[in-house]
Image (cartoon, rainbow, N blue to C red):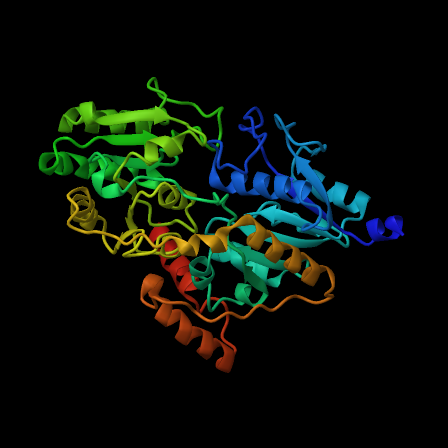
Length: 426
């Protein structure tokens, strides 16, 4: 009987491109991120949770990795050279479902025979990629990591076979932190130090902040190597050479170096730093979820971030932080929190929807749904507020018009944006 039950399990594969992080110790991720990029943390956490909780995750999981990962749990990954190698091994093992991140192998997916594919989208994708995913019959489903990210493609055909499953975040049984109003007037940043994350923007306003709050310090956790430990770094070990020089020039020109402290990559020990800061800042406008925001909230540290995309779901505006529409409004929001002019009631109950036991049950339900269906999936979801974010109100209207008049995918916000970009590139 046990043998029959074992045979009935869904055979699932997942691809982990762990180049640059394979020597990072990931023995136990249940306490938090060990200092790697958010996407690969989520993939590794998925693997560990599935392997460690067979009563909840009743699937047979095969891990395809580009390198042997340090301190895995008691299982073995199948080493592959690239995503095409993954496809070939899926065919050999006759796997039911393969989970891929982003757009890995999007143009080579024809190599697969019978294996269904789920694309786990952690980052925004291009109009062209969305078209391929929407039209390719081998792609059974796409998973967005937040509802706001889904809404970005609301009127595109991609959403006819897409679902929303939040990133899983280790949630402590009890969040222990001091009242933020009595903490030192310090600010923290957590994340990759790259231009796309907008870290230089923080330095551009820091001079004005310490002019009003001279006892404040900025603690910077992370560097440019969080996604790849082998990346070429500048002499200070902060960022790539060009970007690091830009940052150093800013520190010198504005004479703010004494109040900015670069702590490098940190694992769960970063929580001790965060719990002593009064404000956390996230300058990026393109966050699909933002694990750093949850790190701040779990440490009882209010977040100041942009009022857009995934941050609308990981920050409870007015309760666990302040979301602003424009970056120049961040300075005012930070100072209001530093001087206790804005007191938040810190309602963090919404974090429970990111709890692993909830998130991975949704994953198991999705895997069963994909496995039991012979057709492409349809997961129609309504748009969520605020409708003004990313011109969502236009997307709502276009979704209706496209359905009525059978308009092509080009008549979408992402389609028009892509067209404008091509015109200006000429």
